[in-house]
Amino acid sequence: MTSPTRHSTEGALLHLTTLAAALAAALLLVACASPGPAHTPLATSTAQTAGLPPSGSAGTAPAQWWHALGDSTLDALVQQALQGNPSLAVSRARLAQALALAQVREAANGPQAGLGIDLNRQHYTAHGLIPAPIAGNSYSTGNIQASLNWAPDFFGQHAAELEAALGQARAAQADAAAAANQLAALVARSYVGLARLGAQRTVAERALAQRQEQLELTRQRLNAGLDSKVELTQSQGAVPDARTQIEALDEQITLARHQLAVLTGQAPNALEGHSPALAALQSPPVPDALGADLLGRRPDVAAARWRIEAATQGVAVARSEFYPNINLAAFVGLNAVGLDRLFNAGSRQIGVAPALRLPLFDGGRLRAQLGGRQAELDAAIAQYNGLVLDAAKEAGDAIASLQSLQRQQALQDQAAASAEKAYQFAQERYRAGLGSYLVVLSTENQVLAQRRLGVDLQARQLDTRIALMKALGGGWIDDTATLAAATH
Image (cartoon, rainbow, N blue to C red; front, side, top):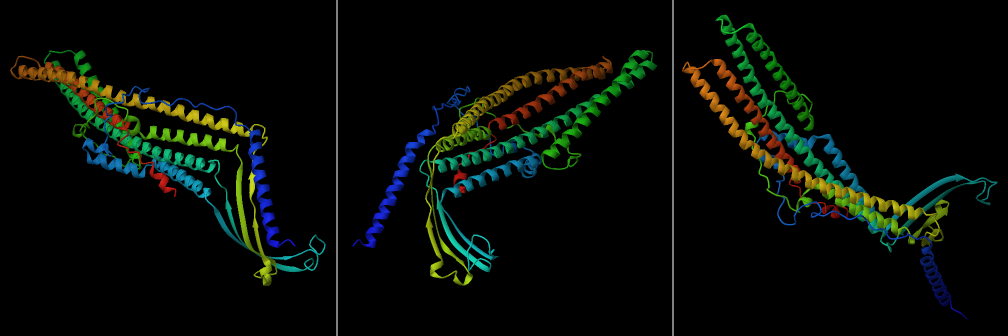
């Protein structure tokens, strides 16, 4: 007589043999859905292809580089902008969204357990499929079931999905840093622009006073018979022209204050009356040359690099779709018609539900999906390559402009000194009775012109140094690797 234990063992062996045969058949049939020929992604740009020498340093911008300008009001405005600007809040929200998606991917990779409790009261039809004694009567039903579900990652699909989500989260974090760096630079450059307009207005006020003096002197000379009405009319027209220049500067100052206020998250008129002094701003130090480390300091370049990583993992996910998908499920619980019998031993139910899914013939859907992911990878690489070139150009342009501006400043200093000396000589000749005061005023025109040029050169140097600080990454340090720990 055959024992029940032997029957049970033979049945288990038969079940395992059948499962193994089915798995082997699946692995043989999976070749029916082929991913096609291998894809070679675009080449990724390097520091050398961007013209950045491997040796040398790109210079280190401090984490809060705007402090080097030496203006506490500017420091407060930048800090306020970084806390309250709406566009920066959008970047932070996108980072939180990307991080949450990565956490969802991480949670989906492990075993999933659940518990369900269902109670129901129902009157069953007497003429349906359910027989007596349930038919035609009302009963309460109950179901208590615990379930366990796990999809083993035999072909790396889950790991690739997680890495793709982490890549997007890291890119979002770098994007937020790039937005903060861009915003700080905009605030600082707007502040310098406002200071330049204020300094130009001071020169314009002196030009107006000079033309009023010239008009009064021309009237005196006309009364003395030394000038004609032609000179008087010319002098009279010069005064409203100078006032027009001041009015135009006042308009620009108002608009600049509005822009600065909005950048810092305030109402447009919040900075009315604010007039920074251009002469009080200091020039932050700059490097003499760029190096390969520039690409590691720029958050926008880092974000593009992480998007390449995410797109690479996306290709791996699409390729894993060609392999079998295995899911293991099990449940245990109680189910009964009539709540008084729900917890009886006979109401228990136990089951296992292994499942195997594999692609056979899909009309090219999976191959098209893989092609789309490969195209996304190429697009991400192309975008990165463009950003690498833009980063090298932006920083290189700023350094070249600064070097030229320094040479221009040296020449302008010489011209300004000559104009001041000529003005001084004209004043001395006038006081000695050897020259006309009109000559003094005419000589002062050259002084005012040089002062205007000096203001513009000083403001341009400050503005270009700020642009260089931004181009160097604004003191950013790549901390995106910490997001991997945040998802666990």
